[in-house]
Length: 381
Ligand SMILES: NC(=O)C1=CN([C@@H]2O[C@H](COP(=O)(O)OP(=O)(O)OC[C@H]3O[C@@H](n4cnc5c(N)ncnc54)[C@H](OP(=O)(O)O)[C@@H]3O)[C@@H](O)[C@H]2O)C=CC1
Ligand SMILES: N[C@@H](CC=O)C(=O)O
Image (cartoon, rainbow, N blue to C red; front, side, top):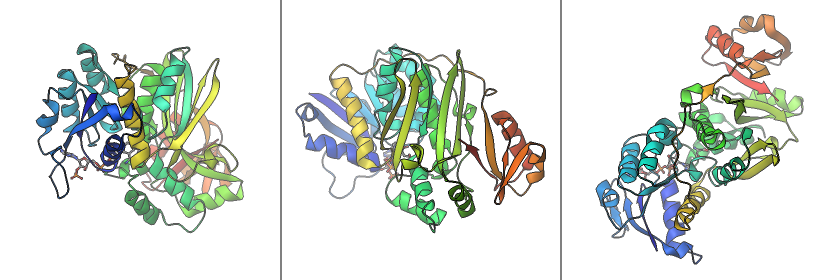
């Protein structure tokens, strides 16, 4: 029997509680959820619920702590306390982990416990587990994919025509896909946090999220989809990490992809994550990337790995050496200041323009110069 304490019981936490309480397999029924931290005890909550974090963190009978509160603090301090107290931690909180990974992995290593994060990246996709499996045989050279369910829901609804951005975002929030502050979703920050976690697992290095060049979909408009459709394309928000001889590049950006491509086939809250390595080649993993039960499934997978003794020990992570200079592309840019792109413009694209191949760094410099807060940019794949 493994006793589990949980911090937070919202969208993800309630899914974890349901799966653990139902215990549908022999191994699953050996996991017992014994304490649950909530802000306020409400009607219908059983004796396991508490408003005091230390009831979970200081309980000597609890073996593992699940953190699904969200936010950097107090979640980060609670995780530190659990690890320092000799308890392994399973978290779905990519924002906290991307911010505090260096400290938390060091602490886990010092106390010989595990810190697992399958649910934090790609919701229900067994992505971290598979990156780990690939990386134990050979280096992962790069990865790319759709890392965010909320924006994928918005984009795949907008591509059908007629859907209003704000209305569809509200639907995604109601369905439990969005972050508490959905700016993290639509500005690409949530995907960037997941790129940071993927770089840790794939390349064994850590970078702050600010090192990931990030463009979101906040200013996307129906005209961008109309132009894409008329050219046999659609739009998806992609995250990428590449490892070139121990230097890393990483970015998040809307991408114009062929309407019959793998990325275009991924709709609603589904995500797809693709890795490249020498002997396995290209492998793709798809599943719901957001939502209560798929994400909870990933949390429980981590718990079972711990129970079966196959959870990875935490490792201290060296800092990544970043080099974004090799990232190049043809970029779609819609801005009220197109003159900034005159010398690199290749063609008009409806209300926008497409550049010839330029570096991502050049794009970023020009975007800054354009000083257009409603500028929308994407890469042509
Ligand atoms: N939703 C999803 O599809 C996915 C979410 N995640 C991540 O999982 C984490 C949780 O997300 P989600 O479940 O959607 O968020 P929710 O807001 O639905 O759940 C978080 C819960 O934690 C509670 N909480 C927050 N702070 C405290 C505190 N100090 N003490 C006690 N309880 C607290 C909240 O209470 P209250 O509401 O009262 O503030 C809420 O019930 C986030 O890090 C998110 O990024 C990861 C993958 C998918
Ligand atoms: N807000 C996130 C939730 C899962 O990580 C998303 O939409 O992907």
